[in-house]
Length: 394
Image (cartoon, rainbow, N blue to C red; front, top):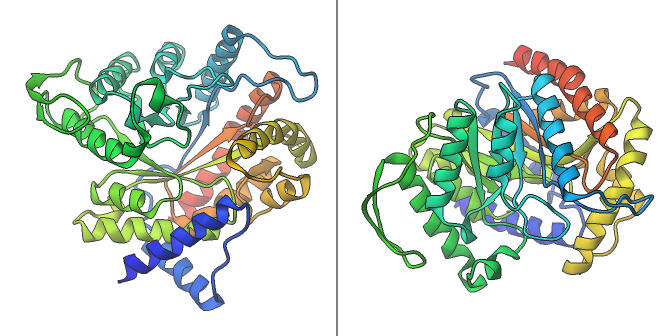
């Protein structure tokens, strides 16, 4: 009953988000119930809290000059950011998959393989692999190869995808959106479990005791499930005992507390120990030495990208006032000075008890040197303070 109720509540919340409004708990008692449930049920971190960044490798025009750099230069800049993230001690770099003209990351594993040779410690993940329109065998082979090149630092973050361009591109029917993901995830997990796989499904030819190579260095290679706002996706990740990456890119963070509660409840019901399952929060953000500078640097490019997507999906244009609300303590965006980002991470950690935070440092095109400075601040000022405080709390 409780899971059914939460699922219904979450569906209502998702509908609110599509209309750019804030979901509010129906009473203070209800809010306290879910806040208490999530925090009291949150596992103590078994290891150091992880901070990282992710990117979609945007190729959008500069919002001020209108100029656009070449795809080759964008990729060089991207590799520099990954290298710096490794040098300043960040834990994870994730790269999204897109098949649109404003992105150059249609083949994340290739770019991450180049980054593997320029880094030593940072984990390299997709963010996300659109598994529904890909071949799980090739996904496994690509990331197993990346794992070997990186000496065991590869991860797969699998999701259904919030954009649909890849479906007609690779010959899939959008009417099969849900079944494609479920079926292909099942195959991917079987490939991870065994060198020789036997499997059959509706959307791909069967495998009958065929070997899939190479095998990764990590046993098993981590597979995360990326979730946007669908309770069924939360339950799927929990039931399979897989770590979950929860995207929070709008609304109040408290609205997503039931997601964390649902994840841990469903995991327990499926026979998994919630304390052994990692939860990541993935959000937008930007950091500068000064709070106002961070906001002024971030907003123009953010508005260009979000308003373009909004026009496609029927959303109203975002205003500066809405943006300023989103970067307050109880908003979704991590935009501000290092201390503001520290405070916000710790505030959300009290809500979710999560083990990882990934920030998309800049949405759209921001000057490369400013992005590099944001990464430096995240690694050298924010991360040490956050880790120290979470370690103390634990």
